[in-house]
Length: 280
Image 1 (cartoon, rainbow, N blue to C red):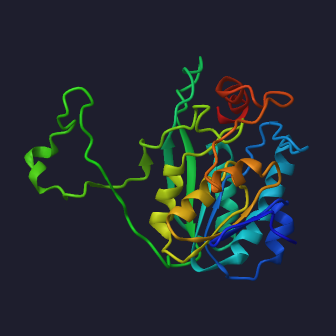
Image 2: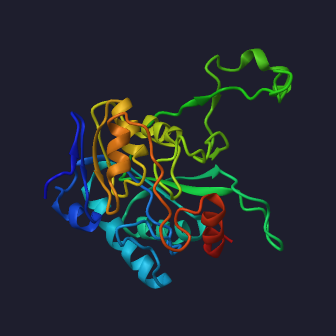
């Protein structure tokens, strides 16, 4: 199997991750980040669709999760991004595989108005597991929140503001500062795309320069772009169109994919209607 694109740090394969993962040696990956399709019936182009029965989708996830755990080094980190609806189930597979639970990170991203008869759904789930004791762990600090109008502190910190760490506050497991990728000038494809800020944070928490990062669902290439910036080696797989990823890694301007069949390419409103099927 030959890569479709290479840099000094990484290789990208235009393939099915279940064809690539079994070829990797056991215990070779330091950090694995997975953002699989959410089984919302989207058409990602090139005949790639994610419309399966619930049981079929979960069985498919169990297969690539098992292979992903196999290729992780002892102490390696596994981050899994999905809807809460699915991560409840997928966390069970990671538990059964002997992985060590670290965090359920709630990433606050709102796309639309509240849904009648429901609580306002406002977060995606990021599971963080390790293969035993973590090999690398760093707890980032975030800026102290201030009022965007007056510039003053939002919280008084009980009168102990001067005792806070100069680099900011300790990061919690609720992230409210990850922006959605909405603008056409920054979107790499028609479907949902992750902010590179999210991947920078993941790599900062659980990897070191020179480590090997693997992402089996390339999407818009945010993981690979972050790895390049942060001097991590990387392996990537994308079953659909790899051109947006290649353009990104070459430093070329993004071009949003043209609309496909169904709801693909219809923008945020179309994506949100699909997510409502499973998110709430």
